[in-house]
Image 1 (cartoon, rainbow, N blue to C red):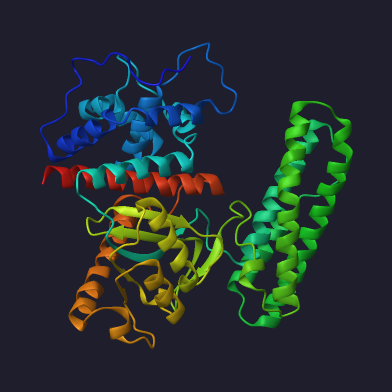
Image 2: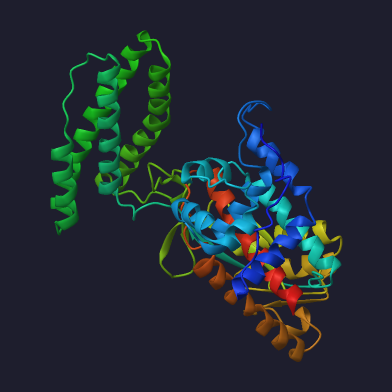
Length: 444
């Protein structure tokens, strides 16, 4: 049975007289005043059919606080387990039951169970507290976009085909242990040789020859896997069902990688970014190109912040939509939460368009400044050139917030796998950032 909170704390739970210790204590005080959040965390921990009886697990309060500690200090699960056992301030913040020292596997299982929607609800409650204490009114906002990379290697056609070969051979080896009797050959050595040759060969004609050999090996191995999948349903048991589920997951992805390589390399076709698969293991990753800069593989994120620096809103986009297309949805989300349009707003030049300016004014924004005018007149955007200059300088402050999120709170690269965990990771980083900043604003 899992409790929502640690019923009785320890008299030894003391925070260090250090800046980090005092900050953790201030963050803990806010969490103590909003215990209704624990019901959301408890429902996430129990949503997979966990009963209310049996061995006691980590209280929901401890899970939420441990998750915040992990993102606040950017720790691995192993490092978090060590610090929870070693640091008095960490134990005091985490509210662990006396004598409990959770292992990394327990922390991983429980923290990853918290959904992105729950983190977003925590952030909204935090922003409501900031508004109530007049730390952030939401009347002056700024918008910008950034990219959080997925946990993948730099994709190339040859490296993706090599990933496919490794996965298919592993599945075929498992099929043999489950009772499959189809004859097949392990071509990993030949495939690796071709992939390395492609990497170091100059000249398209020579590379195409190696690609043809690598594609032939991939298609043959995929044929072996399909034969094994047709044979193994005769074998009963949960291990066989799990194997079949893996085949159903990987088979269409492998077929897509083979097809896109044939289109790109053999046919010389320019495959659109929306039709490309850049990772066999993180198929949700998008190709993001911002301007003429480097290509990123992950997801575009649109952010809204206020004068306090708090992240007021965040949207994880699908694909690579233009910033100008996402301006109005961001503004409407802000109005839905605060009940009114911001008095003044500033946005990056990518959001600028005459239609966006007209719609923002119609929704009630008094001064709307885009970083680049893009053919718009300053008099149409704001009351005066002085106001435009002030709002343009104000917008630049969001760059510092994004930099802090990426350097200190792990938003540069998501280290969790899967789309849902990607969203959870991003939102947990934002909540940890906002909670720490809220504690600092309170103390000033």
